[in-house]
Every structure is written in C-alpha cells, then in structure tokens.
Length: 502
Ligand code: SF4
Image (cartoon, rainbow, N blue to C red; front, side, top):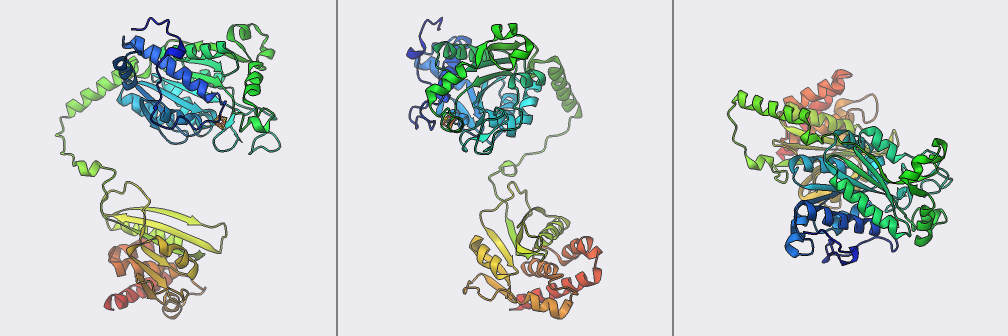
C-alpha cells in the first residue's frame, strides 16, 4: 500500500524497457505527459487495488489492469512505450476501439493518449459521442495545435495567423475551444494542464490525470503542449525551452481565469479542473442496466435453440476459396462497368462478391480498372495479395498489372491491342477488338468491348452460369441497348467456347 510520500523520481518505470525508448524529438513535452500518466496510473491503481507499486507483484497487478488505447501520431506512440495492456489502433478511431474494449471489459482502467489532430479532426465524431455516451474511461490529449508526426500540418486547434506546412500563408480558420467542446458534448470531467518549464505545472498534470482516473465516467484532460521541431520551427519557437516559456505566458490557474471579465478569458488557457459533474457512467446508468436486463429476459423468453457455431466461419483469418479478377483498360472502355456487372452476376449466381474501382482523372483515355473478388464463402477483406485473373484490354495495363497476377493465375489479353506479352505462360490471348468489330459491329469504337470481354472471361473460367452473366448484363447496360449487348454476350460466349476447345 502506498500512502506514499515516495517522490516521482523514486517510482518504478512503467515503460517497456526492452524496447526502443521512444521516437520523440529531444525536448518534446510528450515525455513529460508520459511521465505524468505513468505516475498517476501507478498511484491511483495502487490505491484502488491496495497494492504496493514498489513491489514487483503490486506493479504487475497495476499493469494487468490498465488498457491503454491510442490512434496515430506522435502521442499515440505512447501505447507502445508503456508496459501494460496496450492497443495501437487507427487514425482517429482510438475512442471507438476503447469504447468496445470498455464494454467488453468494464473491469479494466481504460486510458487513451491522443493528439489534437487525431482526436478532433479525424476522430471528431468519436470524441463528441464518447463524451455524450459517458463510458468510464480517461482521454488525455497532447494539444500541440498541429500534426507533428506528419510534418506540421494545421490541426483543428491551430491558432489563427500561425504557419504550418499546410498553411504557408497562415491559418485562417478559428480553432476549436476544446474545453467548451468537451463540456458541450457532455463530458463529466474536463481538466487542462500544460507542459512548461515549471515543476508546479508538471505536478499539477499528474494530479489532474489522477483526478480524471478517479472520475467515474468519461474524463478528458487536455494538455497544452509543445512541438518545437514541427509547428514551433515554422513559428519562431524552434527551441524547446523557449516554446515552453511561450506557453507559460499563456496559462493561468482556472480560479484566476474565472475572475477575469469574459472578454479577457479567451486570451488565457485555464489550468486545473474546469468542469466536474457526477452522472452515472454508461454501464452503471439505470437506463442501460434496465435495457440489458430486458434484453436478456427477451432472449430467454424466445427459447430459441442455439445453433452450433462453426468456429472456422468466425475466423477472420480463414480464407474460403476466392477468385480475384481485375478488368483493366483505358478510360472509356467500360472496365469499371464490367466489374460492377461481374459483381451483380456473382450475386445472381448465389455467390458473395466485393467490388472496388480505380480510374485516373481523365474522362476518356488514361488508365482505369476495377477489381471483383468472388467467393462461395464470406469475404472478410476486400483486397487480395495477388490477382487470380487479369483482363487487359490494352498494352499499358498489361504491362502495369501482370506482376500482380499470381504464378498460377490467368491473364486474358486483348491481342488486338496487346502486341507484346513477353512469352508470359499465363497469357490467354484473344483478339477481342477484332471480334467486336466483326461480330458486334458497334456504332462507336470499343462500344460493348467490356461486355464481350466480361462474357468471355467469366464463361471461359466457368466462374458463373451464362444465365447469371446475361441477366446481370441485361439489367444493367442491356436496358439501354439490348441488341448490341446481346450480340456482345453471344460473341463473348462463342470465343470462350473456342478457347476452351484449345
Ligand atoms: S514532431 Fe513535435 S510533437 Fe512529435 S515528437 Fe517531435 S516535437 Fe514532439
């Protein structure tokens, strides 16, 4: 038990000492914030679990009961530094991950370390809803008013008139007032600390984080911090100590700030606990517990026999057989439409499919392609490591994408346009352009080439029935020009027969 007079300097290290210490620039305030979080966690959890953090067993108990979640950015590297349960997630989504984690493991102390860009730009919606929802977790934001890691771009808290790599002539949008935003969104605990040259501000930061951890519900601690190598370098504050001094002149204790006339308050950043109200956190609220109880009762009343769960079906890493096709050609050849129709045909054939498209800025010409993945099973991830089939309508896309096809894949090339195939054994050549001109006779060059190629490749590979392919085509482009598309389908199926016979 620590009724502790132990000084911060004597406290154990909560870092993963076996790993690289950190990636932060020398003098960055993130080190101060990490130290304050570590100390607050050890003190508060030591007290909560009645264990001594100076003893290995006590420290283990503390570490095992922390779940730190972070997103992307300099601050978010903290989850990698701390030796606890840590999750380094995606940009702006740490609050969403943390919410799920807290719902599943309400016993854990969930703490988030995030930057202002991460949480208030990309993650802005998650922030307001986390504050409203009031799960019991603590969000600590390092507010350096910029994106540090990616090179000093302006963030939602960048001061007007200052310069960043994305604001070479100065920021012209008003910054968020994070404190007001948090209170307005419903956060029950809002505090603000700062990284300056003063030890009293460091001590205060530890106290504020500790108070946030103690608060039952969503707590938000904003840390006014530095970024001397990024934002600072563009605003005459490239020296870490001077940046801290600069901040020091902008902060004032919240008690003094409250005494200021309202028109003067905006010029100062109040430090301390700014807002604290008690309201039941989500998982203890009567509304939530009542709903959960009613849901459980309803589930029991249904008395539906539970189906056996096949674990393999739930395994996101399990890969049912799937085929990934790419239709590629120049803009205007309809390769995106071919992919869309292939997806519809897959669905009509009772399969699962996903479709993605990609095209250049040109309306005509340039490169375009679409990918369709088809499977009889679930498709957990839309991309494939390699293509199984490439349909290349021109030389450029053949040259560009043939490396993406697996060793046992097939490449159907339009030999009317692809003259060089480099003796690639995976190539199946078909004079699609000439067949189109001869058998379909479109009024415009290449009109219907996508349908011909689609019918040809799907039928040749036996991926779907002709009925499903025809039905998907006629429901799509076939409505506009049924005769031409019927001819293109027939020509594609006939060419598939010819190729199969070889
Ligand atoms: S880029 Fe800025 S915020 Fe990131 S570590 Fe360096 S000084 Fe700190």
